[in-house]
Image 1 (cartoon, one colour):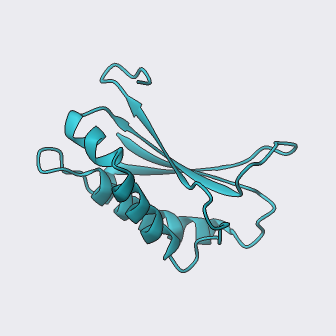
Image 2 (image 1 turned 30 degrees about the horizontal axis):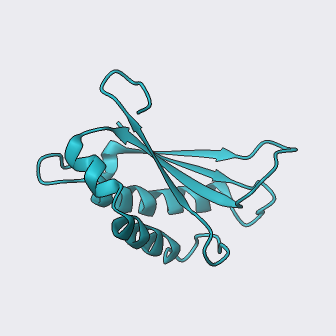
Length: 121
C-alpha cells in the first residue's frame, strides 16, 4: 500500500479536519499518478492519506511536509526518485487551492521506500 503522510504544524489554525480531507483527496490522486507506471498502476483509492500534527514542543523545521511511503518496485523507484518528476509533483500539490503556503525553496516531499518484507530501503 502506498501512503501519503502529511505532517503539519498544529498552529496552522486554518487546517480544519474538513480542509485536510479535501487536500487529502487531491493529494491522493496526484501521488497515485506520480507513483504509477505502465507495469504498476495504482489509483487514488490505493493511496492512504494519513495526517499527523507535529507534537507540542517539537522543533519544527518546515510547517508542512509529505512523506510518500511505497514499496520498492524497480520502475516505481526510478519514477519517484526522478528530481524533475518530484518537482512537478510539488508544483501540482502547491497548486491545490487550500494547501498551506510554504517558503520558496522549502522541501515538501520526502520519499520512503520499503521492501516487499516491510523493511525501509
